[in-house]
Amino acid sequence: MGCQSNSLGQNATAPSFAIADGAQEIDPRKVAADLVARFGPGGMDPRVKAHIPGFDAPFFQAGLAGYSDSAMRIIARRHGCPICVTEALLDRTLLDGGKGFAKADLGEIHDNVPGGDEDHPLIGQIMGSDPAEMAAAAIKMIEQGKLRSNKEYRKLAEQIGASGIRDQASVASSPIPDAQSLIPAELGFAAIDVNLACPVKKISKKSRGGHWLREPAGAIEILRAVREAVPASIPVTVKMRRSYDDTEEMKRNFMYLFDAAYDLGCAWVVVHGRTVEQKYVGPSRWDPLKQLVDRNPERIVMGSGDVWDVNQIFRMIAYTGVSGVSVARGCIGNPWIFRQARDLLEGREPREPTIAEQRAVLEQHFELALAVNKSFRDPELHTAKNMRKFGIKFAAHHPQSQEVKKSFIYVKSLDDWRVALDQWYS
Ligand SMILES: Cc1cc2nc3c(=O)[nH]c(=O)nc-3n(C[C@H](O)[C@H](O)[C@H](O)COP(=O)(O)O)c2cc1C
Image 1: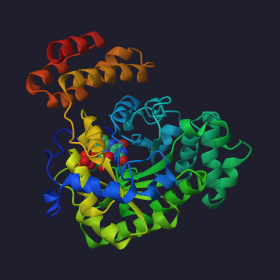
Image 2: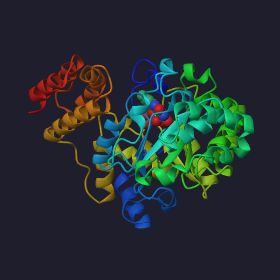
Image 3: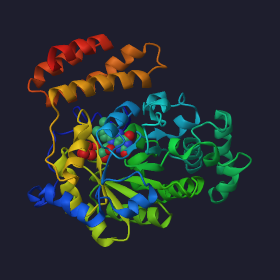
Image 4: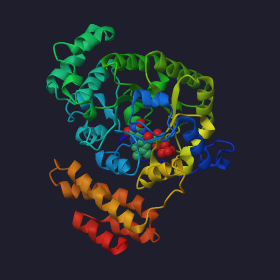
């Protein structure tokens, strides 16, 4: 399933601190206060805001395949998350209208398009193996598939491939008008993120995601193609692992690709401090992130890995110097991490959710997910099955978490969900 690599199951280890000597002694309150003193309210690096004005605080919700649909994103935003990333969408899934790559199971397109006024700003993430298809998929994302038929987008990929990727901009803009004049900016994607990080074999065998760290030259062609296809006003960003593995050759590959991303005009790179080979097993390392920032002060670097609670957001910033932190597993069933981050930035003690707040969010999340899933044959059953895994995570906040978890396992409808909420959250 998607990029998760069964990461919440046997292929992931229990939450632990990243390898970062002394990081746990850093006082998150002081870091938050320093950020605000340096950058003003929100504590955000102005270079990031120059790319995306709504990105006004130094953290965001990561792409999380199987989780981060617009329901989860809206809940995160209601708790102070400034910006979210869609889960990785395969280039071919996008070009084929969602039907072609059912097996890859990276989520449906309808889960990942901007979900109404509240789901903004949103970064759309794409992943794939062919530069021309990635470029056409990026254009389709930007145009939200509204300006051409599926056939025309597929044709566009062929045209870009045939014309050589360097003059694709002219292919893409003719004869269709610029998407930005037709799609209101507030409803479009704020940036396109290219996934060069996903460790899943099914994905990497087909030259996608993290596999590209073994073949940086091919990845560079993809980045070039996507950057050229996307209008200059929309940032292109990159998600990478810190290396494919710990060999010197792979570390050099990483650096080559990292440098190339910025040289090609990408706005920033989000670096996950685990290797591709490591998948989700064992701790991430924050030192490689720190070295990247130390050696490249003029570049915007974002960080990911082992951000399990609000303190780790600020410790990662202080330890590594990254401009923003990607919150991934730490926000599944825990949107309050964003509220707590805002609390710290505003000089308050981070608030734990009350039982009433937990109930309200659990109810809202189900209702939003039902709206997202309305095109399924049995939307309520589909939503209930999908919400079980969230319920189990949310239950961690409840004093009787073991019993609460059990009550979410068999829900089949909104009514069942409410019965569980009445029992435990009244
Ligand atoms: C279930 C799951 C799905 C993921 N899906 C994506 C994805 O679609 N795109 C992406 O860039 N990263 C994805 N990731 C990676 C996370 O964004 C993040 O980099 C990683 O989990 C490390 O952060 P953490 O240790 O704080 O969870 C996924 C991770 C998990 C656990």
